[in-house]
Amino acid sequence: MVDVLLEIASDPNLEVQIDRDGIKAFIQDLIAGGTESSAMTVEWAMSEILKKPEVFAKATEELDHVVGRNRWVTEEDILSLPYVDAIVKETMRLHPVAPMLAPRLSRKDVSVDGYDIPVGTRVLVCVWSIARDPVLWDSPEEFMPERFLGSKIDVKGQDFELLPFGSGRRMCPGYNLGLKVIQVSLANLLHGFAWRLPDGMATEELNMEEIFGLSTPRKFPVEAVVDPKLAAHLYTEA
Ligand code: HEM
Image (cartoon, rainbow, N blue to C red; front, side, top):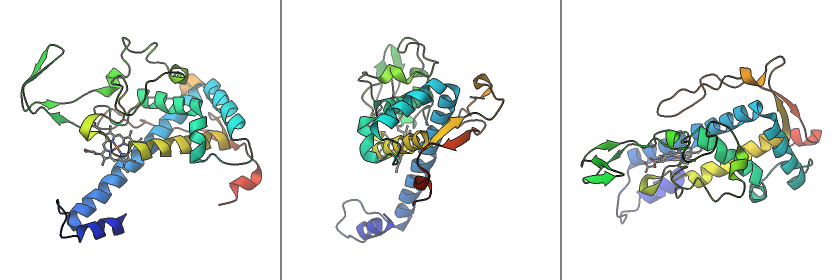
């Protein structure tokens, strides 16, 4: 990636020039935007699943059926794993990485749903609340991946009740990569290991507090016990 950017930077005919500082910022953007967001989403997904062992059982059934126990999940499998996809969407509904997206500035006076927004207003869209609005969602506080089975609602910026990647021209440019990373890592965590809470810990005891800010990580890291589920040689091969 750095090589490609340096090559572009050396092109004198570029309409918008990019210098070395620009390249540094670009790389920083990719690392900052592309690592914590996916890791945080996977951690929330595992937390919700640990609270609802029946979701783990259903995911295991799907993975056993589609992938089988003799190999890991690949990117190509994802299209055949609708339940895993539903878990990812439901996790992003309840735990959007950026609960208020990136701030916008109105470029002209507008009226939205009866609210007058003057030019130059800083506007924050709280997708966290929209995704938990009881007018839009049944049992909004409940983790129910099934709600997305057979539903057309997607996370790609077109369905305004679910905008974990934002929407419009400032929507997350990495959404496709981010989604794939989350789907494949989560599918493999569920496929490769049996997950349970530490001995003596009831599902209600798992703390689900979040730190509400620019992003919404768990307040306390999740702790779990895992046992391998697949053939032993799969854990030693690179
Ligand atoms: C779970 C994965 C991810 C989530 C949930 C996520 C979420 C978001 C959100 C909500 C925004 C603001 C969009 C808006 O205000 O409309 C954003 C912007 C951005 N994201 Fe992501 N992102 C993810 C993965 C990635 C990846 C993998 C990359 C790059 C490799 C990336 C790079 C960026 C960049 C550069 C911006 C700023 C875009 C701009 O301001 O024009 N993100 N992301």
